[in-house]
Length: 192
Figure (cartoon, one colour):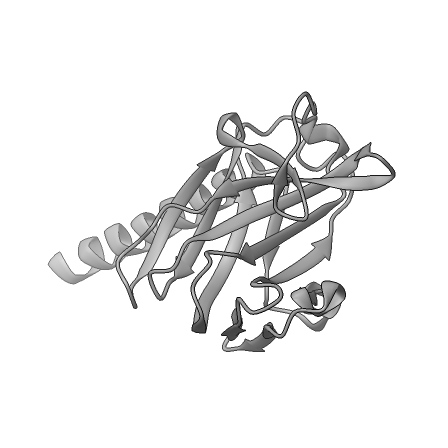
């Protein structure tokens, strides 16, 4: 008689955990993961070669997560980034983002672009990803209150960020340090 009660309790606990996970996902307007070809197809690299730099880097995908890796060269540039378009409006109610990452300890940033421009160039709104223990999977939160507006790494004053207008999401490394880098990303999501 004891075994059926234990089995029933285990099944009930599993069902509750699954329902909680589904409720958590419904609370998120945007959820980026790397589990399907469609979810990874639109990610692309943008490196400092666009301005004559020598850094390399980009995304590759394995075991349902993205590996953003390369080599930063500060001679003539000094950045590498990955970007993907998102549906405008997905972040309308968001106050920030949550990420599950495994870092190498370098200073990465989340980048977002809207339709806000300065002198004909789209502004990049950036927020630092908190530093985490090197080599360990960690869930982190970034707040839109900490966003900085920039173009080519230079601050832009007076630019207004509207999360409802975000149409591109990315990650950048521009920490002024030469050498290899690697950031693994399991998912990115927005929650209110």
